Image (tube, rainbow, N blue to C red):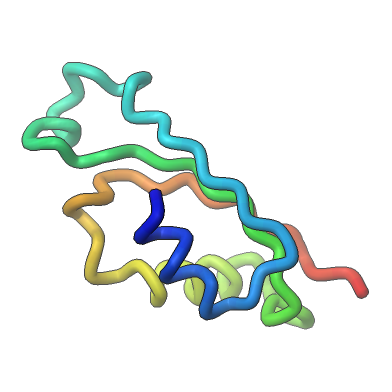
Length: 83
């Protein structure tokens, strides 16, 4: 989780919550070898004026080399930034 937090710091988030949900996927093929499942809620001024897809792309860009290992699954909540 620390690596995810470090990578997403580049988006200057006002809010960043990261939940490791790997325990909910025990026995799942994607969890083999230690790959993890995360749920991330991030609010950032960098999201201002962006569509939900564009917000997700920004997050995935920061984490791209971590997928599919050590991150197997990533659930994103990226609400629009409100000033």
